[in-house]
Image (tube, rainbow, N blue to C red; front, side, top):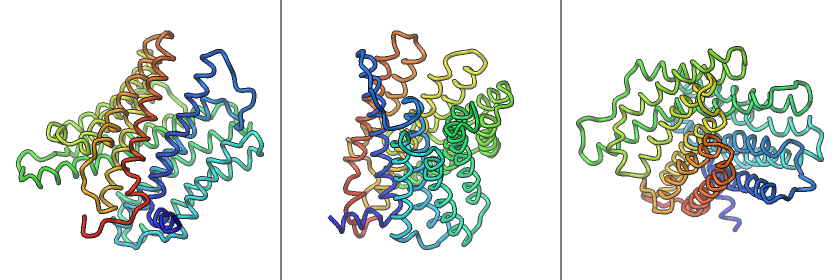
Amino acid sequence: MIAAVYRLLGDGYRVFFFAAGVQAVFALGFWILWLGVHWAGGMFSVLPFSMAPHIWHAHELVFGYGEAALGGFLLTAVPNWTGAKGARHIFIATAAGIWLAGRLAIWFSASLPASAVMIIDLAFLPVLALKIASLLVKRPKPQNVMFLAFLTIIWVANLMVHLEWMEITSDTALTGLRGGLYGLCTMIAVLGGRVTPAFTRNAMQREGLTDRLPRSFQVFEISGVVAAIAVPLLVMADVSVTATAAAMLVSGVLQVARVAGWRPGFAARQPILWSLHLSFALVGVGLILTGLALIGIGSEVAALHVTAIGGVAGMTLAVMSRASLGHSGRPLVAPFPLALAYGLVPIAALFRWMASGLGVSWYFPGVFLAGAAWILAFILYLVSLWPAFWSARLQGKE
């Protein structure tokens, strides 16, 4: 047992991708439990956290789950980018402890001073950013250093949530939650825009298919990233609904245009590839739907969940699972339960869109079906990758 825990804390992808999966199940599971009790006519007499349940649910998935996924990815990828030695056990254990302390502080926030909750919850990203900065110094390429700016956007978005909880501001929590979500979308626009065509190209070349490889058009790549960065900044600035809607529509169209050139037809043969393509496209679709909702066409809540579930959760699940398989020395082939998890996430997005997009009568059935699909997806993810998180790396494998 001690050896397994030591291994878990030995690599960023192990502990943080495992924590992300557990957080996904817990945060959504409690929200569905609360809704179920409410729907049945009951109520919780006391809750351990101080914020409204739907705000807790959103915060813990955007910042709790999202930051764990970012931590695991960056602590694993940045050493590969720079050639620097990865984080040691002591740092990974400390960072994981800080992340967990943030989750506990939020959960028990009804019994803690709001200032203490804020300090504890906001501590993780600066610690992560300082470590990433120390690694990037070895080879400070602008295309990698920009991730420090993205982490800052997400941190400021979380700060906006806490400022309202501390009653310093009166209306920044929902803006901060949206800013955090779209900050994660910015990460996906950049990182997903790198790995999705690269992994597809590698798979095609392994099969000897050297013609019609994935193509990335520079005009779409640059403008797509710029537009993606503009979205959280405009959302958090809260200056113009028209400008924000326009940025979302442009960014969404550009993300869909980008993925269209990455050979999605070939990717459809392999779950470990189509999960990347589909979730990247759903980020774009979600942005388009949200942009339309801001100008009065459709439900913004429904569109937000397409982005959050189909796009952000789908992409993080796909990247976390692929990285865990590869770095633990296992074949880059999704076992059936993991492939099923890939399919359940967009199904969850569809049900959740129906819940808010098709009228009041669809709300509870849609939310419960979406919740069931989400929870099952992440349970399958945890079960499928349990050996990759807890067991020794397979020797002689790439």
